[in-house]
Image (cartoon, rainbow, N blue to C red):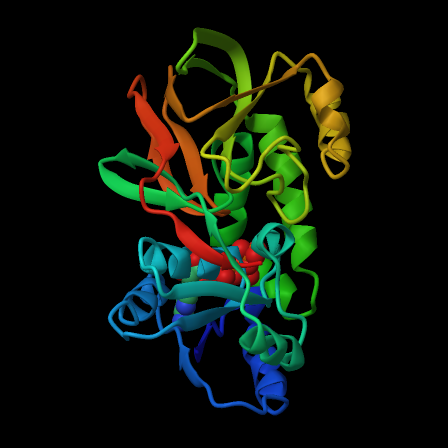
Length: 302
Ligand SMILES: Nc1ncnc2c1ncn2[C@@H]1O[C@H](COP(=O)(O)OP(=O)(O)OP(=O)(O)O)[C@@H](O)[C@H]1O
C-alpha cells in the first residue's frame, strides 16, 4: 500500500506546517508527501492517484476543509482510502472518521488495513458542492464566513487568540442577524419553518469544532439529517448553543430534526452557506436547493 501525505500548511491557523515537520521526523516507512498551494489543490492531488493500480492511503494533514477536498478527489475510486492526522482548528472529520494519532498507528494500519464505505453529501446551486460532515445556511454560516475573512482573526492568531475572534463574531451576528422563512421538502412531507436562525444538513454528528449538532447521524446509512433552529429568542439561542456540545439541544422545542435521503430547501431571502465550515457562497432567495447523498461514496479508515 502506498502512503501519501497531503499537507495543508495553512490549516490550524498556520500551525499545521510546523506540526508536519515534527511528524515527518517520526516516520519510518516509505511515503510521498505534497503540500497544498491553494484552495482546491488537495482535490486535484487526490484525484491524480486514481489510476495508480494499487491501494493508496491518502492521509490529510489538516482540518475539515482539507479532508473534504481530499474526499471529493478520492470519491468513487475503489483503491483510494482516506485517513487523517488532525491538524486543523475544528477537526470534526477526525471525530467521526477516525484519525492517526502518530506514525506508528499508520504503520499498524498498513499491516492490517481496515476500511469502510462512507456516504458523501452533495447539492448543486449554480455549481456542484460536496460535503463530508455538514453543510448549512444561516446564522452559523454567517459567523463562519465572517471569521474566515476577518483580519482581526489573523492578528489575534499571531498570539494564539484566534478563538476570541470567533466569540466576537458570534455576538456581532447574534445582534444583527435577521431570521428567514425556510421551506423543507423531504420524501414524506413539506414543512414551512418561520423565523429560522439556521438549517444544517448533516452526514455525521459533529460540526463547528466538536458541537454534536446531529446526534442521530450515521456516516454510512444512506441518509442525511436536517437540523432547523427556529422561533427562538436571541438569549435562548445562546443557551441552546451552550448545550450543543453534549447534544442536549435536541430537547428544545425550537430545535427540529428529521432524517431523509434527500432534502429540498428554499429560503425567502438570500442567506450565507458553508460546506464543512468553509465559505460556500449564498443560497439565493426562493431558489430550491436539493441536498442528497451522492452516488459516489468513499473509503475511510476503520
Ligand atoms: N496553500 C494554501 N493557501 C491558502 N489556503 C489553502 C492552502 N491550501 C489549502 N487551503 C485552504 O485552506 C482551507 C482551510 O483548511 P482546513 O479547513 O483544513 O483548516 P482549518 O480551517 O484550520 O481547520 P478546520 O476546518 O478543521 O477548522 C481549506 O478549505 C483549503 O481550501
